[in-house]
Image 1 (tube, rainbow, N blue to C red):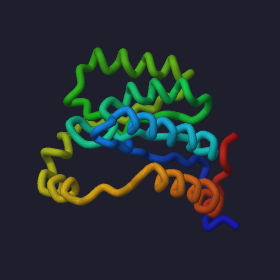
Image 2: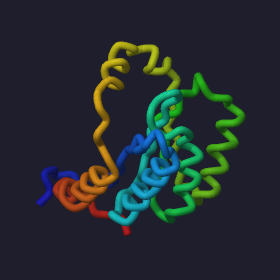
Image 3: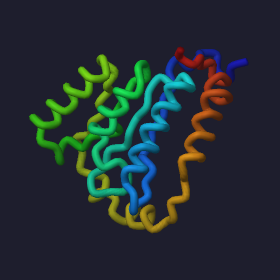
Image 4: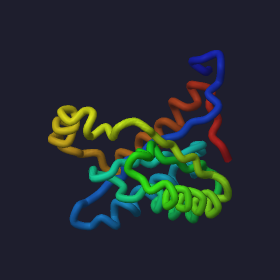
Length: 160
């Protein structure tokens, strides 16, 4: 029985990417594996965190291009592209290319404000000092729990 009288129509997830600094390729592969798992579990969308000069996916748009070739249904999005740091022509071309490759499944998220790194420097320094212990298995467990327990409790039905 749903917790809400109005069913949840769509359910997506966000990933920052998981990386071993010694072997960055494994982090990108892990991110792509998580997106593929999300599609198999019936999630409607997968979002990749976009931050310059920070830990995580080095080029979310390129990673989403790869994800578009490994998936067929799940929508793919950026969360979020800081427009102030982007070349508008290059970004438009890259996003258009990924949208074509994905068959129209790209949802580019953008921001127009100052980069958070400068707006909240103190918070960033504390956050990056904390140990990062989230691993691929944690993502698998959380996505599976959301798809099989939380989503249905909110009236969401996995896409097929």
